[in-house]
Length: 127
Image (cartoon, rainbow, N blue to C red; front, side, top):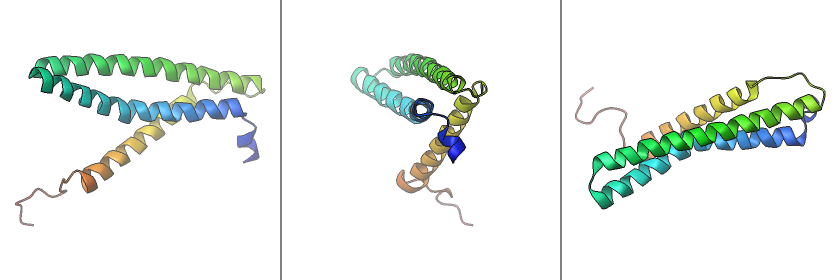
């Protein structure tokens, strides 16, 4: 624990923001653009336009979040190097992205199985 605290408050803050940004990447971006696409399709009755808006929106949002996460990773690296630690590369960003993806998969599974009304066994099948 003592070694973990030697990282510094700035580096820990960068990791926390990276984790939140990663959750936004995996959960917030798809939900936001599905909602925007549904609003576009509902008001214009054009599925093609809705898909175009969603596709462009997702690409731009993911690009912006990737730039932000890359800068946060650089900040984390700079904090560790300033404290005399070895350069970890982008290992923390990779770990945070994988952890946030796992949280997103679990959250989707919980929503799908418990709240969306989905049945794990197709209805009408006799087992």
